[in-house]
Length: 56
Image 1 (tube, helix red, strand yellow):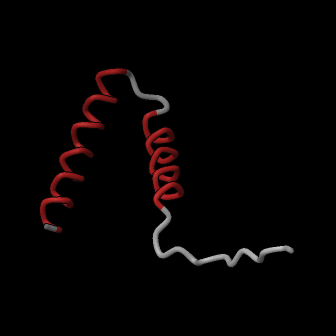
Image 2 (tube, one colour):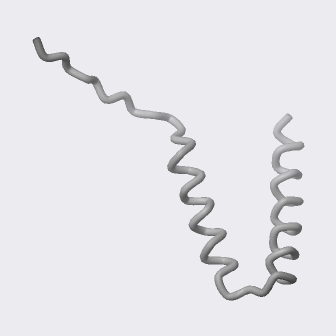
């Protein structure tokens, strides 16, 4: 007996989303030195924190 697997369309795919985010960050910081990477992460983590705080 074969079972049929129904493909369910996901509204939000966390794995795919995080892969896209990681790829964007990799491209953004590719040619940066350590000091520039730290500044980039600090700037973008503050943006993320602001987004998260305003959604609560």
